Amino acid sequence: MTINEFIYRLGILVHNPHIWKYYRFLKTSASWNLNQLQDHQLRECKKLLIWAEQNSPFYKKLFRKADFHPGNFSSFGELARIPPVTKKDLRQNFLDIQIRKGFSRMYKTFTSGTTGEPLVFYRDQVWDAAHRAAYFRGLSWFGVLPWHPSVYVGGYNINPEKRRWIRLLDLLQNRRRLYSFTSAELKDMIPFLKKSLYLEGYSSMIFGIAGKLREMSLNIPLQLVKGTGDTIFPHYSDLCREIFDCPMVSEYGAAEAGIMAFECPEGNQHIVMENVIVEVMDNEIIITNLVSRSFPIIRYRINDTVEPVHTGQCKCGLAHQVIGRITGRLFEYLYGKTETYHAYLLYNIINKVSVQDHPIRLFQAVQKKKGQVTFLIAEKIPKATKKNILAEAAKYFGEDMDCFVLDKTSPLGEKGKLNNFIGIEQYRTMSAKGWEL
Image (cartoon, rainbow, N blue to C red):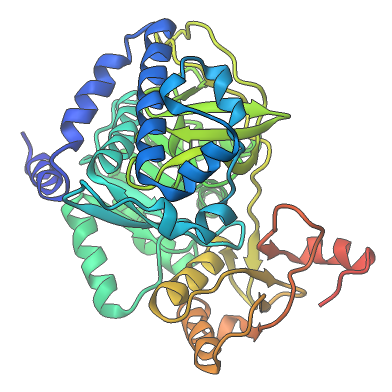
């Protein structure tokens, strides 16, 4: 056992001792056939439905209104009787959904806010273990273990003290972190990246990094490049093969839904059937998280569109269902006066202010031209909160971006899923339709 493995395993025991037990379960269930996996799903789904009815006023009311009785649940088709829930439902009914009874320890979690609506909730220990174990199992398919040297792309631009703490935690996990792909930051990371086995983070941000490395005429072989958070286009993987000697592999998940699918070495995105049930209705994905006992996620509309799910034994050996290509995720770049940034930084800014200052219910950021971005906040917010948004933005962009905040301002676009970032090209298109800032 290496010192890195020892430190990592010790850290896991301190954080959540259930993780390795659940990981061993997932390694065993990887050999199950489809019938065994679906039997497991039905058993765990019934337990979750009964638990939610008994402990969550929100779901008790929802089930009663639909004349749905969890004790009689026996087939996947019966789930369709439960009306799907949305992130808005989860946010507005948080107190009637969050369950604290019976849990000795819980972990605060929040969504990225990519729809403009951040959500804060608490995971119990088994849920946390199932989520992390699914991630570990996916890594293992590529001969990678979590204590192997890696670079993570993403994270928060936080105050210096907290950033030092994050840096220490990354060091203990044999990991380094890139907050952006500015030329200076990337050059500082190259020596460690050359020693790493895998790179992970936002797909489009990894693509941007690969492009920068190509400009430097650098090739850095890796065992795994894992993208998440946004669509992986074919040209992303083509560039990764050129720069990293491997394609970009997809991890499909969300904080509230968990890791729903992980791509195997054969290129198929296998659903983590031990943890979730995936339904596809009119190409829209509906998720039931089987381990979400502290904050039940039942028939949740995640607002992503996908190609149909299919079954069959994969060449990798798994019988787990395969999810089709995710077609409804698209992130963009944000252009400063001299540098290029990933749009996810905007979610980080709003989430940070929402958690530490004033909860922001609905936001959208609009870029009309390079070097300028405007935050649209639907509700009225205190002047101090506006200042905090600008101060947080300055940590990321410095003088490279002029930032503005407008409250009591409706987001641009049609009804439906809110696009929380309107880039330059999209703004031009929308302006032609009459939507202007």
